[in-house]
Each structure stands twice: as structure tokens, then as C-alpha cells.
Image (cartoon, rainbow, N blue to C red; front, side, top):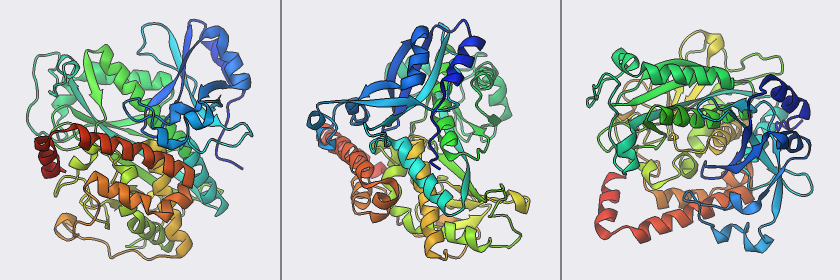
Length: 457
């Protein structure tokens, strides 16, 4: 049974009946760069979209992060920019409470003319990996943690990065991890985020003020549907950005907006369950049971070749520095945030792993697919991991992950693992887009800027 769940028209009928004031609907899919692209529908068009879908040009999945066509993808002139039918994803039709005009939104996923999932749609790559896990009797239970920065809205509109002033006038400029006062200073925005999340059905839970000025994280609860967990991450980003804008702020999930402050990561929490919902990682063994160890070993073995997925942009590589809460080499440990794979503490029945490599700018579908695929890789091969780290992982693990964008892209091009697990066509499209962005980046910046980038990357 495929992990892809297409919505029934009854879902739209129920929504219309319960929300008579909503007049417009944003429908969108997420491209390889993690950007949402789609259409705005009027109320009278919703049921038709749920009955037969809505067409979008295949070129919308060939665009770079700036919206330019990338011809080498084969999704443009070679196909006459033909339409692909896109269908609504079950459970994603929710209100957009930050919009002044009563608005709702839903996620689309793309299909070919023969009914197969479009190879260029990142959501289908995650579905493929989940299907492979389920064929092994393994059900991924996942959650995505996303860190983000609040910025001064006016400064951001002018291209400047600046911490925001709170309504009381105070502008934080120092490092203050877990500062409760920050939660009070920005309570209006944060309470609006929680209220919007409840309306949108997003399972927002624990809120913390992170290490740097204006940096926050709200934990999303685990889902036993990995695709829904990734959908949550997409909807969550849109919600945070929308609510911030209503409060005169800018929210960014950029990997590293400031040179002097910590970057923003995407942490993927994953356990594997059987058909009854039993956590197969559960156990009191000090270094984890065999299944957990095999999964960790797979993540270690595939981490370097997957960096182009986890760190998709030039700015992404500024996160990776010693003692930065961003990893430099494959390693794991129990309840230790100085390594990329953290096995959580707590009761044995809650045991799961947290993969801490990706930046908040990574595509949630592709990053989560790569994490689960790496786990499957280790399980199928019966791999054994390295010895768990005790103490400071930065002082013990030699830097070995690509810390330079072109190197990461080269490693991904050579990766049989990525092609086999995510789909060769999807990987080729993704890397073609990212290689074009990388080439343009180095062609457009000056020699001084290249020196600056090389020094900080």
C-alpha cells in the first residue's frame, strides 16, 4: 500500500460546510528547493480540484530557488512545458488564519499521465522510501524540529539582518540560551503562532528561546505518518512566516543569517515501529538494540554523500564549525548534542534517534527521505556503527563531511545510494538545479566575495 494518501471530495465538502466565510484557497506543491508553487482558487473551484485535481506546468518543478528555469532538468522545452495533474493531499486542507481575507490552503502532489507519481516531485521521493520501510515491516514515526530567527521587518525589507525590537522597546543583542524573558517579550507573536497552529491542526508543543538573539524553536509532535510529518514542516514554515509578517516581523529559516551567531537546524526525530505500533528501538541496552545500531550505522555511512540534500545552499555551509551545534563528521552518542546522531535518553519505550545534520533551509521531504533511507541502508546490510562518543564530540571526531558546496554536489553526483533510494530521475533534477545555482553564485560574486565565502564556509 502506497504511503501517498490522496484526499477524497468529502474532505472538501466538510470543510466548506464548516467554514462558510472562506472565499479563497491556496493550493501548492513544494519544489526541489523547498519553495511552494501553485495557484489561488476561488471557493467555487474547490470541489473540482478535489474531484479531478488541478493542472500545473511540469516546469514548476524545474525552477531554481530564485524562480529561474533550469533547462538541463528536461522539464521545460523537451516536454513543451506540458501540464501535470496535481491532486490534493489528504488532511492538509486548513485555514490560513494570518491572512486578512478568509483563506485556506492545501498541499498538492504531482502525477504523470499514466497515474504514477511524478519523479520530479520531492514528496513522492519520501513516499518511495516510506514504502520501502513498510515492505520490511517497519513504520517510521517521525517529527521535525525547525529553528528559526525573527528579524526586524523593516531592516529585512532593506536587505539588512537585525534582531527585532520587542513591543516593550528592548532589542536583544547578546547570547542568552533558553531565556524566559524572550518568551515574555515576544509573547504576542508567540501566542498568535500557537493559536494559528491550533486552527491549522498543527501539533505545536514545547517552545524555547534558542541560543541567539531572536532565535526560537517550537517542537512539532511525532507523527506515525512520515509524509504527514514533512507536510507539517511545510505548513509550519508558512504559518510562522505569515504570523510574523502580521506582527511587522520577518521570520527566516535561513541556515545561518548571522556570522557571529548560531545557525538554524532541522532536527529529524525518528523511531521505527511494527504494525502494532510497538517501538522497535525500545530497550534498556546501554548502546541500543541491534536494530537501532544498524540504523545508526547506515546514517553514518551515508552522511557525507547526502550533504547536498541536508545543506542545499551556499549559505548552508556557514553552519558547520567546531562547537556550533552543527556536526563536522559522522558520529553518534547517547543524549549528546555534540554529535550528528543523538540517541535520546528517557524511558526505554520512548527511545529514538535525532539526526542533527540538516539546516532549516533543507527540503523537509528530501531530507527526511534521506534520513529514513540511510537507516534502511544500515538495517538491510546489518552494519555496525562506530563506538558511541562520550564527552565533546568536536574534540574527538575528525572533520570529514563536505563543508564546501561544490564538493557536496560532487559527492552527491557520485552517490549510488541517493539514486537508488530517492530515485535516479529525482536526484538528477535536484542536482542539476543546485549545480546551476552554484555555478551562478560563483560567476556573480566578486573575487573578494569568493575569498569571504571560502573563509567562512
